[in-house]
Structures are given as structure tokens and as C-alpha cells.
Length: 524
Figure 1 (cartoon, one colour):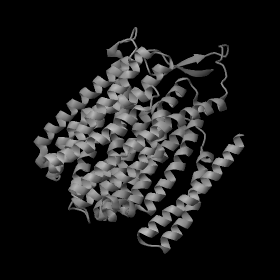
Figure 2: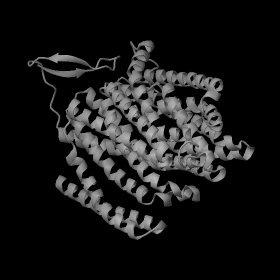
Figure 3: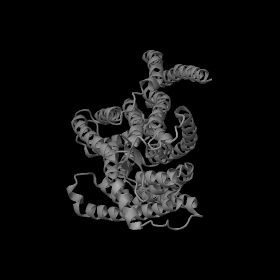
Figure 4: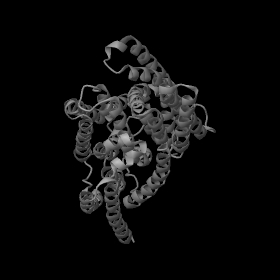
């Protein structure tokens, strides 16, 4: 007896239905053609997402201005406060941003646009309301337990202020997730890519001019996220302009319960993942004055390192927003073989992008950080390690997406294990090695997380090993790193860093071109 998955309207939980041998089998789909068609769809979506990702990097201008106008200490205070707010915002959103993408993709797969609109409204109301309540509770708690936190008072004050950005964050995340569930990727360009960095930067300059001084970054963040959320909401609403307000037979209460039930485990592991990604900076801020070389200025330098390396995490944002609804649709219809092949192809694309970026940040890290000021030169060695950690996180996040749309509880298990490893590692490394300990302490858990997700895909989902797909970029990087290291050994200073990075890119680029030509000839 064989099995297939059936999706019932009004419920996004798959149920197993037995199929006898006499049942009529579904028509056979040409798998290679389906993979090629999906590849075109992924490339189109990835192109738009890349534009959004590059546009969002203009927010780096805001960090640059904070460092230049207020100094590394102010940047460190704001970074710790913003990182904490980002973690707490996961509680407010409650995983609805990822869950709504899956729900709407499944609803659209069966042509139920009215239900998609109902889900959109439910998710927005729930997310914003929960964020407001969560922010209010945390702000009140900070006032009562301020003296017991053993944290720098400037950081506590900044956190209490920047928590007011949580409703805007929730509005942006859920509205953008709805657009992605409809496979509309360009909305993020306008909301986060253009609106947020422009409004945040202008708000910061205005706040400095009118005298907010040290609180200027927090005020700017509140204004920028609110503007981004409102634009994202307006754009998502246009997708349902001519759709009836409510689907027949759709109960808002039942849909809300189903949505929250699906999102709950996602929210927990998202919270844990956000905690892991920010844990090195938070713990470094906690150990100010209690670990070798750790001061508020050092935390500011390290926050610039994280901000620079986080560009590698954003590579995932070029692919994951379109990959999530695509793989959700495939698994909903039982097309697991095509999903596995698509995942392997996407993994190779990401490696071709991530590996040269890691090399540039490793070889020329100190030179790149000079844009923030001479005091940031010391962060070069840390940048190479944090860049590798960010690239690892971006790469293994593809596996998280696959697991999320099928068995989100496994992601929760993986994140719990990773969090324990991260906390233990950082707690041991930072008091002994300071910022360098923080860098290695965040790399270790991402390596563990990658192994856990690989094991799940390999032995739980029974997906084939994709080594043949990821081997070409890995070999190319191994070859390119040899001449780059030779240049780095014989040349010092800025010249040595720039030349070694350029040599790596040149050798790696030649091998990528050779691989691309060989693949094209093979296809023809």
C-alpha cells in the first residue's frame, strides 16, 4: 500500500490517506522539466530579492553615521539595544511571518484567494497586537528590575526606548511574508530596501540636529521601522484589492487558531535562532570591564564587524523568500523528488556567492572596516571568523526552510541544541579571549546546526546526498586560496590585504566561468 498527502481546505495540516493499487495514479510529470521550470522561477525571484537585499544594505550608511558622529561607544550601545529588541520581537510576532508564507502559498496553490486575504488580515492583527503587549510588558519590567540587571545603565535606557519599534517590525515582517507567500518579491525593495534606510538615516540626522544626541539612533530606528511597516502593509493590501472580504465557510477564529498552532513551534525556534545570532554581541556587552580588552568602544567595533559580516546572511534573503513558497507547494502536492533536486541546485548557487565574499572579508577585513574610522582597524581578525559563521548560517538556513514546511518541531530541537552549544561556548571563550573568543564562540554553534540539519535531510527525509552539486565551488575555493595566502604572506598592510583578496577573486572567477561554460555545453 502506498501513501500520499492530501491537504484539506481550511486546514494546513497534512493528513495521510491510503491509496489502493486500483486507484487511478496521478499523471506523471517530467521531473527534469519541472526542475528547470522551477529553476527559472527561483532565478526570477532571486533576482528581485537580490535587488531588495542590496538596497537594504544602504542601512549601513546609518551605522556609518552613528560611528562617525557619535563614536564607537554609541554604536555599541545602540547595537546591543537593537539586538535585544530583535530577539524580543520574535515573541511578539510569534512565528506568524514564516507561518503565513506557508499558509498563503498553500491557499494559492488551490486557487483560494479569498482565504488568503482572510489569513492576511488575521496575521496582521495578531502580530501587531502581540508586539504592542510584549513591548509594554518588557518596558515596565525594565523599570522595576533596572538595578538588578548588572548591565550598563546606558544600554538599559536605550533598550527601553528602542522597544517602541516592535509594532513597526511586526507590521513589516508579516506584510512582507504575505507578499512572498503570493510569490511577489519586489515589495521588499520598496519597504525595507528603500523606505527603511532612507527614513532611518534622515530621522537620525534630524534627531542629532534637534538635540537628541545619544538617543538619536534609537529615535531613528523607531521612525524607520514604522515607515517600513506601513509601506509593506500598503503594498501587500494591493494584492487583495479585488478579492471578496471573506471566503465562504472560513471561520476567522478557526483560521487564527490553526495559524497560531502552526506558528507556535516556529516562533520558539525563531526566537532561539535570533538569540543565537545576537548572543555573541549581547554577551560581549555583558562582559564589559570583566573580560580582557572588552570595553563599550570594543563592543562598538565588534558590532561593526557583525554588521559587515551580516551581509553574508543576507545572501540567503535572495533565495529563501522565493524558495519557501516553492518548496511548500511541492511538498503539499507530494513532489518531494523535485524539491530535493531544487534544494541541491540552490545550495550550489549560494556557495558560488558565499565563498568569495568570505574570502574578501577574511583577507581584507581591516581595510574594509576603516570606513568606520581608524579605531575599527583592530576588528579585521574578528571579521574573518564572524564572516565564516555568517556564511555557514546563511547556507544551512536552506535546510531550515525545507524542515519548516514539513516538520517544524525538528527545527525547534536543532535550535535548542545549537543554543546550548552557543551559550556554553561563549561563556567559556569570552572571559578568556575577549572579542576573538566571541567570534569563535558564534562559529561553533552554526557548524553544529549545519550538521544537525544535514543529518535530518539525509536520514529523516531520505534526500540524496548533494555532494556532487556543492563540490565544484568548494574545490574552486580551495584552489583559489593558495595563491591568495602566498600574497598575504609576502605583502603587508592595506596593499597586502587588497592584493590577496583580488587574487582569490580572479582565480575563483576563472574556475566559476569554466564550470558555467562546461555546464552550458553539457545541457546543449
